[in-house]
Image (cartoon, rainbow, N blue to C red; front, side, top):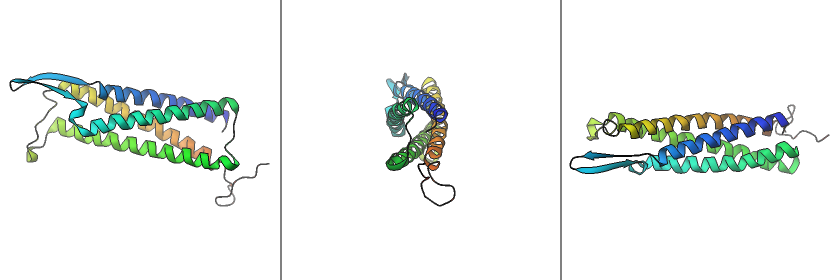
Length: 182
């Protein structure tokens, strides 16, 4: 891994970790209590299952990127190469980066869909609008979803770097043949 690429990857991973943690905190600690029909009702992320899933997914993605950040910083200072037997490590990192992006994007999109239902309601199913009662809660969830999509974009860039680091090890002249070590 080239030194400049490693620094860029480490910077992107650090930014992704920070934004993912921010997303998890915004969703996880968001709550609002209102007096609704003779009782006090508290809205939390546990009211929508997809928000609970989003908290878990972004937390795992942040942990994964934090672990990878340790690998990036080690390879940046030690100037390690991913050649030979370590090609399997490069493939594993590439595939895990892809999975992290897709799962995070899917969880964020599912939470966005449920949030739109909370904003607009669904007359056919007799689902009421919730965001006209819990406005602060909904605004904070909206900010968290925006942070989640920023994290997805950052992780997509990380995945591009991971693909570059993997496929630069292969010969451009022959299909799936590793470059010579010389």
